[in-house]
Image (cartoon, rainbow, N blue to C red):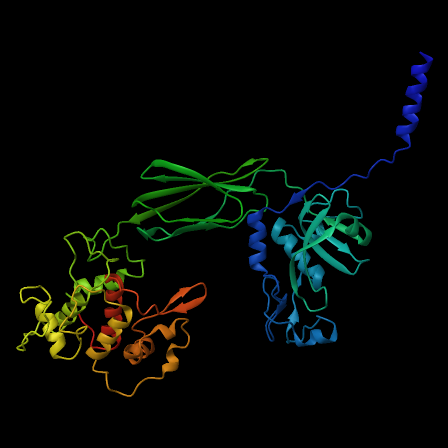
Length: 467
């Protein structure tokens, strides 16, 4: 018994000599959606100033620092560019106070001022560097503390996501303004939404982020029937592209660990895709780049569908097709010349058009009495045909430097170079952006959708408009 007692006393003495660790601040962070809101409102790398001659604007910023910052101060309220002020505070302290107010809705001077980090949390304002600088805490994760500030170098520069260790912060701590602790459920979100969309449009609705909301749950219904529920945390908006038309209802609830808000609602009517070419099931709606050109070509009789319900927008255009389109634009004139092509039978749908194009020097054969009506029409061929059709061939050549911005300019054939310069200069065609570089792809076959769009631009800008 004595032996056991001695062991217990020894253990007690040993434990009593171990230092008791100070209370560490618990991990915390500003909700991602609200942090994104603050960062969007006060962009990183901008300056918390007001423009010359403008009044103080605590919600504003400028792209450049004020000239008087060169003197090492951002105090100037004489009508020139000056540092903004909030709650009678300027520079770093005023900016931190402004962020704290936006986050909590409470004025900084009503908060509790303490001199310990034990209860430090995201949303607090900390005075550091021996009473020289103020920062706004955005996250505490383990030993790492993240904050936002401005005016570190007397220029009102806004900074986000600066990191410091707990120990480093503690060594420079002067005091902390502790934000009020909110232990309630979030308030009901205030939604902002449009009421009408066309099918295929990107639907979006938004709300002002709530400082104490950790997530937003969105319940979606169509014509009163529940579809799905999604949850967002990083933002305060939701967007998607409906695949069906009808009456949509969106119920948004804000949540945190203390509970959920009352639901807020948005109602939207998604109208069906309704236009003059709606019979073509393979034509994308009016938001697609090709829609306007296809509609223009069909309505003005330049193109026909490949069936009653299809246009085949991605099918490559042939030489016979483009001859026929241009021939229709000229109201289908008859040609009296003899047929020079062995592969163009007189009873073919494109025969009269090919002879007309040959007679008017708009299109040539490919050699040896061959026209190749079913051959692929390339992009450099279509611009050359339109160049001739517009009566531009033989005019002074355009500056070939027009093509230098395109990575594949050297791939343009010599016989098409003048036509390609003309087409680019007149915006008849545009290059494709691939990996940050522009390409002409002159030898690639042009699709029916591309040619319809090219013809629309051509007729609108080069020739008297049709229709």
